[in-house]
Image 1: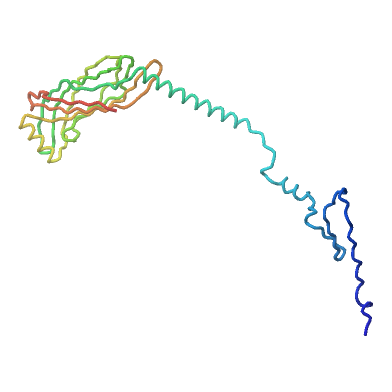
Image 2 (image 1 turned 135 degrees about the vertical axis):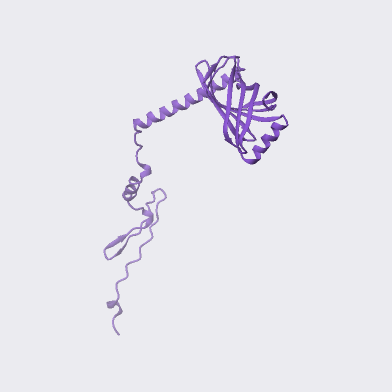
Amino acid sequence: MSDISGVGQSVPPTPQRQHSNPSTPIKPFSIITKYGGASLRSPRMGYSATPFKRLLSNDPLLHPPRKTHPLVWCSAIMCLLFCLIVIFIGIATLIVFLVVRPKYPQFDVPNAKLNAIYFDSPENFNGDFTLVANFTNPNKKISIRYDYLDVELYFVDRLIATQALEPFSQKPGQGRLEMIHLISSLVYLPPHPAVELQRQVSTNRVMYNIRGNFRVTARVGVARFSYWLHATCQLQMTSPPSGLLVARNCITRR
């Protein structure tokens, strides 16, 4: 029987328990084990803080703030000034509208004359029509100017004549009469409108429609604003050669 003590390794002596003095500060718990010359420390000891410092230094969110470029500041200031100017203009416009209370110019046809209607063929229409247009500026503090004027003559929604007018201006409360001569020469009318026009001529009641499109610029002091006006008039005429205006209904809107 071989000697067991010669084969086995010697058992290290059991460490004796040491009684700690309450007044002595307790050192952090540490266990050191040797395996092949390497030592392992308990996680409670905490590893070196150097790797964590390196990670924090590489974090882009923790970089020191950069200086703002002067162009960015200039752009921000310009945008702020632009917004303030827009707000100021809006408030000024609102005050002007509340104080002045602008009204739209009015278009009317107080008189008209249907001079002639005849057909060269069943579908080719010729006509001669004259009207007096009344342009009125009802505002007491606003001057206006008509930059573009176009008057059209319709029968049953068919355009049969058109006339452009020269631009003009109107002072507050001023009216203006314009003579407009509308001539229809060989205007094509489909069979149904052509038959309807011949029927109205025979009954001595011809229904015409006037449409006006106007570009108006209003001026209050140094402030100016432009808008479009659209006028419609329904005219009831007697048959030519008398061709008198019997009734009318005019509406002006934006």
